[in-house]
Amino acid sequence: MNHLTRCCVILLLAILLTGLSAAQDEKKKPPQRFGFDVDETTFPQQKPADAMKSIARALERKKVDYLLAHLSDPLYVDYWVDQYKKDFTAGKDEGKRLLAFDRLVRETNEYFLNDPLIAKDLRVFAADAKWDESDDLAVGTTEKVPVRKVYLRKFGDRWFLENQQQ
Image (cartoon, rainbow, N blue to C red; front, side, top):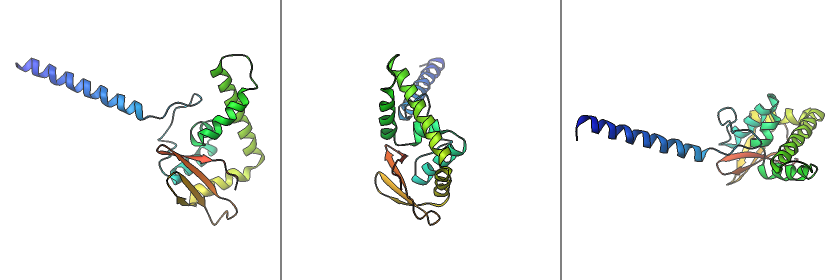
């Protein structure tokens, strides 16, 4: 092989390997939910403590929509979206789903506004909770809020806030 042919073959292999690497990275990326991409840089969820800090950060930034889309138990969120979707009779299914999600976001915002102690307590848990962790459940406790616990559920490699009022 002459020098030009070798260079072309090496360049072609490099392009193919780069394309394969990018395709594998895309497969690992969690899917978009309700129009929101996962932001693992701002809102990491690999450990319970990381997820709790991300939850508090989302509340501080008034990102309840992101909190519901990617930081809360997806089964719980999907259940309520499906319930609210029944109220919308016209339009396409995806449109009804987005309207139902918007309703859930508004109601959740109102919930936090009506009881600001909940968000305050979640920030305390983010700052100094101790985590009792099993395979797919983590329970957070803190001496500063002894009457409450926070529950996180693991789906895949990410931790999500579970709705267990305690």
